[in-house]
Length: 392
Image (tube, rainbow, N blue to C red; front, side, top):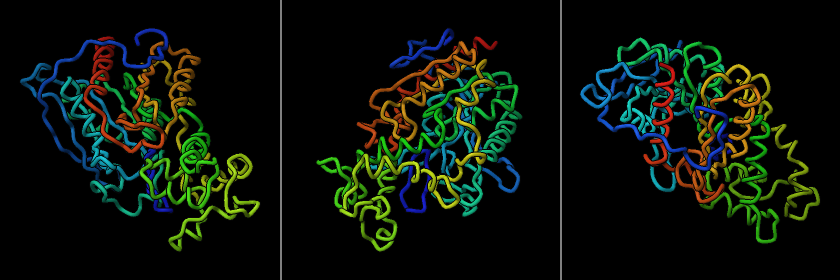
């Protein structure tokens, strides 16, 4: 999930036709034809905010005829994302949803994307976003965008799919559960674990090893090097939990005095960090914390908790093996929950060497929001095409 946190450290946080398949790579599916696309901008009144949106669909003179075409609604992760999900990283600018939309539209789908509530464009948003963000509201907003799209002649209301990314996976699941017209779900970087366990993973599985020195301790020097280094956004956020906030406000990096219980200037991973992790999480989910939006009662449930209402829907889960935001075990937890609820059409695709955006990531530390390739995304169109045929 992605977020701009009070500490100033951004976080990128923010899925076959048989029994559950846990495949290391996409199963072979027929490659859809590739054609030109057309773009239709439109606006949606979300109630208190007018959102800019765009429908990208196959060109009428292309291999997919004059339409209408099956619909795919893209639902963002956490943070003030524009319709393209524009992110700046070490390798330049990534436009995640623009890339996904173009790949799927060229292969036969009418793809809808939109600015989130309070977002004006890339990097521009109303201050109300941080004060009023809510996954419940974002679920309602996504439904309004979908209804606006389905009123357009290019969109086939009989074949509707939701594609959620990160936080948007939970939102997509909640929207599907509230409607009766969704044919299937594609979930990328799925929120499948309890939110508290997901944040624990940011701290202990990513931030801690990233901040350790050669002796395995977290010192002021190793922490400063981590926060100034080339690690990904989640790695830096996780490491920031170990820093003293007063020192940071003064432009210095020191280990947290509250965690350094023996006062030796270094944090022992087991005795002083892992032992204190519940306290760190209590603060993070509290009213002053940076993940209060995911506190109990303040958010839609993780996807696994919604499986009982959704298991009849076809599900495709896309998981980068080096995803620092939503750990790989999260994807498999969702597959297991779907199957346990009685679902028979669920596939989990693991992508070695890829991160949260399905772009290259050499490690959990290196998950920096890079762009996915067409070769990675094209099989999704094959999965969707197979399910359009099945639904008709």
